[in-house]
Amino acid sequence: MKPFDLTETCVSSETLIQGNLLHVKRDSVRLPNGNLSQREYVMHPGAVLIIPLLPDGSLVMERQFRYPLHQTFIEFPAGKIDAGEDPLETGKRELLEETGYTANNWQFLTLFHPCIGYSNEVIHIFLAHDLTLGISKLDEDEHLEIFTMRFSEAMEAMSSGNITDGKTMIALFLAQKYLGKK
View 1 (tube, rainbow, N blue to C red):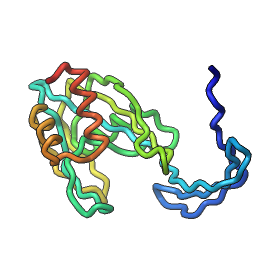
View 2 (view 1 turned 135 degrees about the horizontal axis):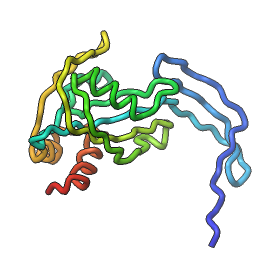
View 3 (view 1 turned 90 degrees about the vertical axis):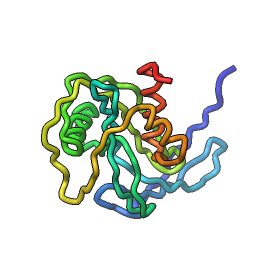
View 4 (view 1 turned 180 degrees about the horizontal axis):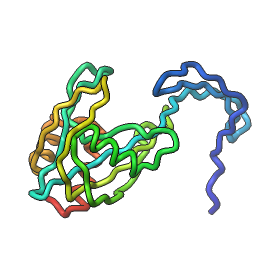
């Protein structure tokens, strides 16, 4: 059986907000049944999340205050893709900037779309190992606490609600599978 064509076609588009990072748009769309409707969504440049793995199996993590929720979160290092930048290069840049580490080995694990109902954001996940510590180069408006956590501690922190960042949770489950952890 042939699947239905569920494509919605843009009839017109307007920019509601043109921010430094995010842009909010409203499109008039033609639905598969021919009717018109509106779609509001956030345009995002995309991001990369890095799972930094130390030789002893510990993970390099960070604590960061996230303003929209007014709280500090435990996360893996991550950052936005600059225009025209390859996701792997973004990962290398962000790992160094945020943690001071560089990695000799990089493994692409997957990509995912975290907010399909209202954003075009895509997040690429890489495992980075064979790490060398250098000096971090945080952006002027970036404030992080870098620390290490055993894999089992990270999984427990997720189970107990101390790690609630969605991208970090997905990455932990991927790492668990990839590394054969229980």
